Length: 261
Image (cartoon, rainbow, N blue to C red; front, side, top):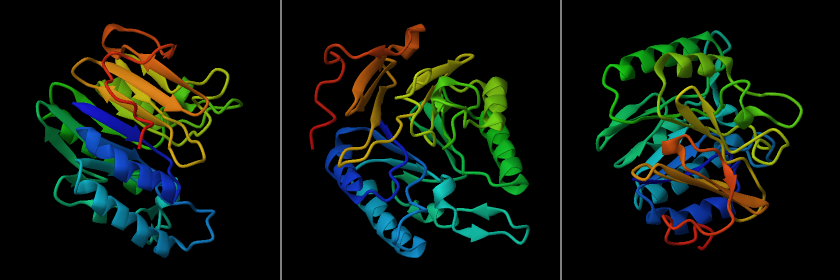
C-alpha cells in the first residue's frame, strides 16, 4: 500500500486543489489534522463547509483518513472542553475520521481526535485498548500532535509534543504514527520529519506556504518513506532500522514525482 500523508493545511485551498489533482495516484490519503485555520478572516462555519466539499471530492477518488487538530475544534461540552464535532461528517464511502479503527487489507488504522480535556483523552485511551485487541499485521495511528520529546515535535526552541501519546506508543508499539502540529520540526536544527520511539516510527511532514503542501509518501510493502518540501527532501528505510537521510537522487521505488500535479 502506498500512502500519501499531509497535515496542517490550515484552509490553504490551493493545497487542497493539489490533493484533488494528485491523491488518486495513491492507495490511501491521510490528512493528520488542522484542516481549518483559526486565524483566518473566513469564519469557522464557512471553512467547514468548503473543506467538507473538498473531502467529499477526495473520497470519490482515493480512500481517505482524516483526524482533527487543535484548529479544527468547533464545539464545547458542558464541561468547557472543546472538540471537533464537524470532522466525523467527512465519513462516507471509503472515508474514515475521528474515533474510528478499521482494517485495510491485513493492516489496521486507528484515527484519534484532538483532545482538549479528560473526556476526549480518556476516550482515546479506551479506543486504543479496544483496537489493540484486533490490531492487524501492521497497526498505523493518525494523531495530530507528535509524541513529546522527539525530533518530530521539536520546533527549534522547545518540544510541542503530546506526553500521553508517548505513553500510549510505549504501551502498544504501533508500526507507524502519522502526525503534524509542529510546523517547524522538519526544518529546525535538531528536528526531523521522521523519528523512532521504541519500535514505532512517527512521521510529521511539517508545513509550508504555497500551492503544494509538505508531504510524505510511505510504501508499506517495501517499508520505505520519502519526504518532500520546497526546502529539501528526505528518504527513510523504516523497515530495516534506517535513519532519515537527505534525498540525493530520486528513489527507485517511487516511480513518479509527487510534486507533479
